[in-house]
Length: 419
Ligand SMILES: [Zn+2]
Figure 1 (tube, rainbow, N blue to C red):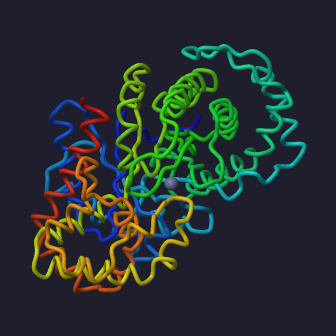
Figure 2 (cartoon, helix red, strand yellow):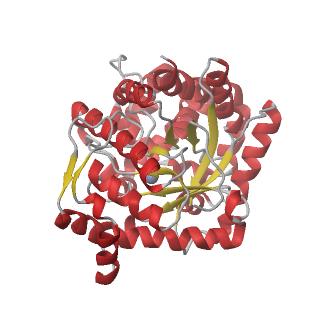
């Protein structure tokens, strides 16, 4: 394996659509670190987000550097080019030191038959009974299954290799962290598939720091996990066992860990995850983004006056464009239209009513997950407001920042890493 930059044990990916919450986000990492869980901050923004908002990747680097300087953060931090591909990576190369290579598009497309055969021949250990420490049963994968999995994923892995080497050429091998993401695809990757994928990534000589599989169940935007909790817990534990095994067996970096995309707000998962991480003494990367944008809206609503007006206006526009806004996110939201209040009704709401409907507090009977998910996908409305929105973020900075920090620290880092 070539030289590489490695990522600390616990890290939080923090997206910030409008680039005003860097300090508030970093403060949450500081608080976690003070309380005994060192959290490495990673600011992430995808090409898609940059395009929607009209920003350049260098702006994320500027935000991260400014936050770090303002708070006197002395530990590592990173800037993640999130979900990049060969066609989109170039403008990210200079400002980023973390690259999430998205290969979802090539999953399922078969690699050359000769390459698949070579892979299966190179890995006789994968077929048959394979004892993986901490798995209840040895894996028992037939040669045909190894071949099936290779057929499904090998092209994607080769693709990751190409993109990785393209970045190396431009940036130098020891200067960045590599993640491979497979989450934006149709079906979850089972633990034995993950093992085969890791073997193939090791063959490509990618010094992988994080891998983002698609997990069982639904990871809807900004709301809790929907799915079979027991099954998730079982597979998460098995994934950790497989990662630890692959590190030993294939010489992948010892810091390799799972990355959980759409990892914010999955409150029912944090306890089983915390237990599993403890059991395996494993690290994790949690990727979040929209949860911070929702805290901006909560802060604006809480501030009242023109802040509340803006929040209401965004909702009024969103409710008129439900289908348009939801269409690109069909697989990652579940909105019950019957539960969406009318624009007129929301227009009459107090700060407290707006905040109660939006804030992710499952104990509050006024919390409305449909309302929250619609606003999650409606950030383009704020982008269109432009200067007016940015001016409100500045004017109400303190109340917004408090919400941003509290959300990340109290509802995410604490239950996942500190309890
Ligand atoms: Zn993702």
